[in-house]
Length: 297
Image (tube, rainbow, N blue to C red):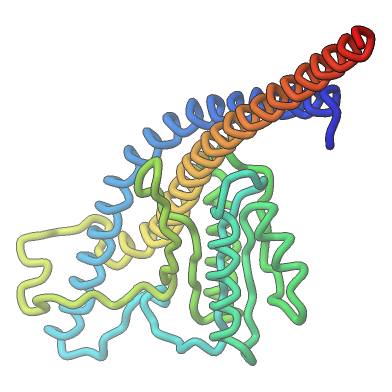
């Protein structure tokens, strides 16, 4: 049976841990509010950018069809098959955020299994994902890696990541780019998303009337060509912001649960301490009574 000193030492240790988890929860909550505002402000731009790109591409297709030409579209829309897949894995740099990283790693394992036998390349964002890809036996070649960027993601990080991906795609080193990240749904909910970044699906729509009433300067084709790299980087920036907010929300929830568990553990230890003290006092009283009776007799 543990001594009173040992139980008191455990209570003190758990209290110290609880103070740390409470502080980490407060820090994550403060950062998450800023991250949530950033993602909510970036989503409308990303959605509008996506709609603009698809409209311009649809107009390009419609112009070729009307002119009786073979449809020629930007390489970003060109389906190349999936013989040279690329994975962009966005994880956290640190742990202590519940199942945030493990869910992402399970999704990436499933992706690698589905693409077994193919020459997969990968871009890792976050130390956890980078370390995981290094540990995979016969794993993918690392195209680029970004670590230590959370929780201060900037558009410059998306530009670095986007440039590496775009260069590899245009050079023919990859034929399809898939992104796996955690989408921020709410403070209590994050969802693992696997989405195709490149090639962009060829838009479907009314080709006959697409682009009517619009004029472009310097030209629709040049405008589309200049916007597409920015579109890719804007999407990557949104993915990074989503992951950042989701990580902070997961860490806040994990630290809240840890603080509550520590409180329950402290309560159990205090009950155990009181019971043991009571048993000691009862035993001492019994010994005193027994000694008094022995002396009286």
